[in-house]
Length: 118
Image 1 (cartoon, one colour):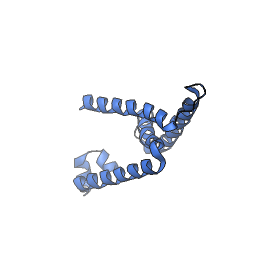
Image 2 (tube, rainbow, N blue to C red):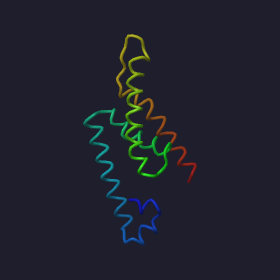
Image 3 (cartoon, one colour):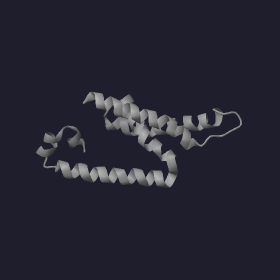
Image 4 (cartoon, one colour):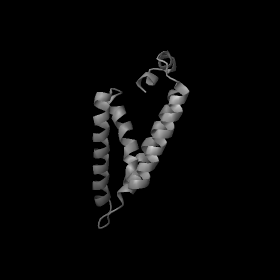
């Protein structure tokens, strides 16, 4: 995957089947994300948002990016839990609702930014 991040030609020079690797990776990631959300509900959405936040804050170096992803997910979920208990007086909102309110605009912004970058 690291070779693929360097570019298709670079990965091919290592003998990697780029199209096959992309397809297999996409299928695996999709199944893992679907399973996580199916088991834990919309809170599993944080597993998708946290890594993107960490990449924006820390860059692509996996020594910092991987622990940063875990910390970003924990921070977002903790803040969502606090917000769910304090937003409406006397009512505890579902944490999944608050995480969706954070995650959906964040992903929309990422999609818009990637569209402009290309």
